[in-house]
Length: 463
Ligand code: ARG
Image: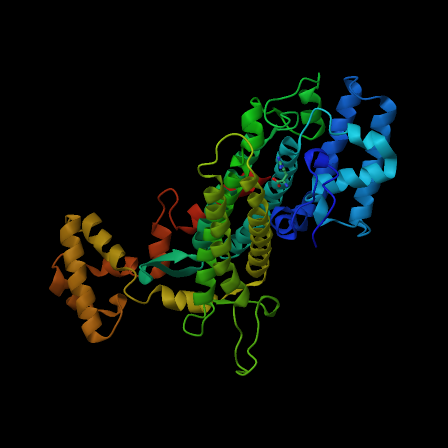
């Protein structure tokens, strides 16, 4: 609908209202209403500061602050009518404030601009997401520690190239993800610490001639300090990009784990059973139990990384300070944040509920000549061979076992000796998978003792 009256917030120099298409491309209220609580918190802090510095009367500030609270409850209770003609959340709130308290509402915008206002609102919103991601990651790490503790000494195959490599422990595999999600936690925390500077009071781009107190509003909004350059403060979206960057890496980690769960829950592997609560059935094949949650988590990285790329492209090449291009920042971040939190929660639920099939894990652990490296290491340690020669001798024994259709421990001592005369009965001691994992005692290795040490370290970090 074409609005024939000019905008009441900035229409002073306009004779006509915008074309309907102009309004459609310009309005952000459809999505930025998600920042209503942040917008009202920012305005309330600004009004209190304007009164404290004598820029506004106490009476006006009181009316403004109370009116804003009324608007917040109207929005929370779904009683607020948003208008596209008022473009965005900032002007929707201010316009309603005028209806509620009259002319004093017009004094709220003293010493600020929508440019520092939107930067402040969006920062507060992203900061909440960094906190939510931190909670989600902590819960997921806790679930992984539970799995690791239960199966610290359960043997399973370790893979490279998805080919059996060496036996590892279930606990060790779970703890690998604890390290990955632990780094994600660190990235979220780092980003939060770096972003926590208040843009409010940077005004349109140059600061303001009013004697405002930026420390006061920064403190009221939980920021560590005011941002030090007004041009940067209104045009910086690094905080959103850092969130998207950290979210992308986290989503990539989630997708790797999700992929393993898809493989492990297949009839061919049977390493894990996912709970009914986190699986779906097929409408045609009655036997099916599908790992849909894992598959969707595997796919989420696409939209999250897509948001990261999109915002990088929006920001690339923008001159200082604010440009309307930057309004394209929000939907990307909203979508990425929603999907990251959902993926973290779904992964946490799956991990807490899933049952590792210890027998299947152990059965697979010894397959594929997984202790061949242990045999080579034994030849180095006991028979004194250079590792390269030991590798060669072991290779010939693997070939022999393959020809006989048996595993390495099933070869006879005579067959072993045919590959190298110095091999003794002792060698059979290192060919079992339990021995193999127990021997991997190097720091960070797969031996259950080392795994338990890392579990204890993480519990200490998190306590
Ligand atoms: N809706 C705008 C945004 O999201 C708010 C800032 C508008 N500032 C301006 N100078 N037009 O970026």
